[in-house]
Length: 348
Image (cartoon, rainbow, N blue to C red; front, side, top):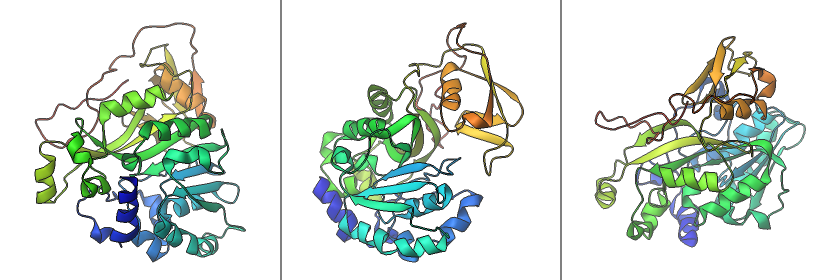
């Protein structure tokens, strides 16, 4: 299947109009990123296929790894955000996509005013990151946009991400998930696989896989239902529902399996660029500036032991335990958009 995917993205697709479903279609970007996207080379944008946006906050000076970087769209946007003191490395297995990315490297260096290029591209498989020139514990952030579902060994990918991240680093990525396990017969269909559908993980299998790889308490940032909009493919898929979702996973070993209450709180200072009024950690933590915000122990650690620490005041410690944090649940976390769906928040 890996060779089928290489062929699909390298030779069969010449632009986003060639896609047969809406699974690999981006959502509208936030206002502060639109000027950067407008400055990208047309070919880089045309040959890019993604299902979300992988540009988290507070990126100045960060070292970022982009898995399945394709034509380099996200790499170049991130290169503008990390600045001259940061670095972005893109990995992809497709020669045709990497050719697009590399031939516009100097164009983007000039466009964003960098003294030197702060990006580099490597050819390789995301299941074989250990074979590439990548140093353990080197990266502050690893991103990926609608690529993990295409991997034939997702556990290997997530495990390698854990190894490559610094302590307190973050895996921030968008991907496609299913509301149930996809039948094995569908995973052999190269079009369904290439369209980012039949390789999608059942959401709860993903959560357990991430935890098994050492990423405690995965946090959903945002999600949306995919409508497919291709009758022939919809007929093959039957009643399976698919979602585009963005998760953030922190490389913090002390995170617990559930949200435990230690009576802690944080105060956001309003100092993250483009976020003066509130900070969004995930889909159920919108932390208003200047307000005492009660949090579970895991959320406290995610903020205290990551690049976000300087932007918060921290109240409390781990001396007293008060049980599970109220509202912590295990329902399907995604926004469904249908009135009969049972949707709930994932914790705190």
